[in-house]
Length: 125
Image (cartoon, rainbow, N blue to C red; front, side):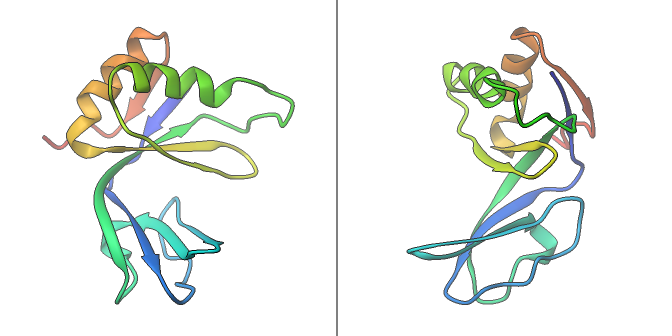
């Protein structure tokens, strides 16, 4: 599969109130029994939320057909084998894998070794 590394660092936050969707090529607002989760560019993190930043986003080239199977397994298995945590978001057209910026090189190596192609922004170091 082809994946694009987005340029900016992302954060994942939890908040008691629903945060706005935020700017950027990817932002998500989700609710479960424990409250609201927001994911988006670090620079747009909601005020007063508890956040964990430093994530880098790998966007799967889409659109992906709803009938496809094994997409996430093909991507997360090599990451798990390399010890790289992942936070996954899915949209109507594609999937996004958020990996810790400190583990980006390991993620890139694992995915490339598994036959996936990565393009986009380089690791800022």
